[in-house]
Amino acid sequence: MVARINTSKSISKALNYNEQKVANGTAECILASGFIRDMDKLNFYEKLAHFERFISLNERTTTNTIHVSLNFDFSDKINTEKLQAIAREYMERIGFRNQPYLVYRHDDAGHPHIHIVSTNIQKDGSRISLHNLGKNQSEEARKEIEIEFGLIKAESSKQTNILNLHPVDAKRIIYGKSETKRAISNVLIKVIPQYKFTSLSSLNAVLKLYNVTADRGEKDSRIYRNNGLSYRILDADGNKTGVPIKASSFYMKPTMKFLENKFIENEKLRKPYMKRIQTNIDWQLNKKPISINELKNQLEKEGISMVEWKNKENMIYGITYIDHTAKCVFNGSDLGKQYSAKGIIERCKPELESREKEVLHLHERATQTQAREIVNTPSLNSGTSKILDNLSEPTPQSNYIPYQLKKTRKKKRRKRLS
Image 1 (cartoon, rainbow, N blue to C red):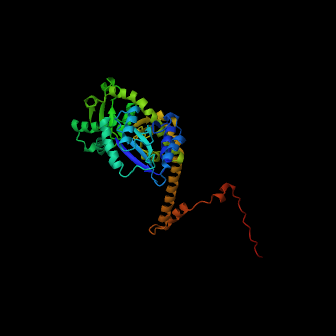
Image 2 (cartoon, rainbow, N blue to C red; image 1 turned 120 degrees about the vertical axis):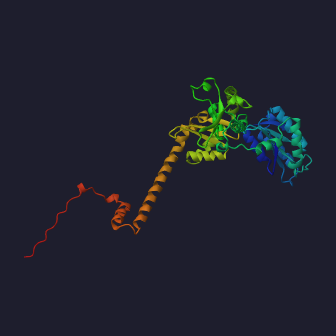
Image 3 (cartoon, rainbow, N blue to C red; image 1 turned 180 degrees about the vertical axis):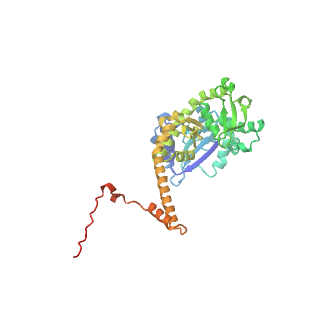
């Protein structure tokens, strides 16, 4: 468990942040401690007014609000009752047992976490010191709660984070079974338990980021007919290389049968996170026209990878979105037609056309500039120079008259002097 404490001067901002999440359907208020009325009967203004009554007892104290987030490891299976018990224990151990506080469960991230809003102004007008609260009381409470509730320890999580997962470098692998298996295993252990994928192609979209692929073989092959599966390393060009390793030989046994059960399980688990990807795509495309590559780069900043699937002609025929925050994978068609490969290409197409015109215009200007430079080069003979002059000069279109329409002018004869 990781605890983060933020202090501020505005209880309304902290409260409003969580209530907005509730209104959007990505959070739920699961506990109201120190309030007269039941939690489900309190509206926003009643919650705010109750906090403000405490704060009004000490107007000299400017920092009067704490906003705590308790973050748990993704593998911690915690129901609402357990979250409520953890929140009570934590607030008691940091000295806020008798303070009014609200607890919100947030569902907008890949790991379970809760937010707690409270004030440090007590009933008698005195204040609870916030100095080193996170370093001392909170840290001690965190360690005790981890043991009491059987949670993954923060030190273990930090150790895991140190071992950041990097793409497999095919050039560094000595192409033998042991080295290949070790490299692939490191990726599978990180990806399969965490990410919510619903097909082999969506799993491969994630594995592709780490230069690994799950391979069923050709449709007429024995491995395919027997529902077999092997894992392989991809080189820099996305080609399969190295020794294929059977799925059954890995410790976690990521076979097709195992994955098919995961597909069914993940179908329900990923649904709440669909809106986040849709919103991010719409936000980027509605701001201004951008290219597909620019959209891809902007989504990366939001923790969303956009994997493109291309045919032999290098044309995009499919798109898969990977939300690394929620650990969810969606094909474009899962999100709706406007998020599919065809939909994204059409939404980016006007901008691509304008880019092509801009590139063409710059190319024409560069060509004209080069022509002028060549004309001014002394080494060229006069004949070549005149030709380039004529080519680079603009033709006056408005005064142009076809030869056939020109009238012949009669020459006036001069009268001879007698």
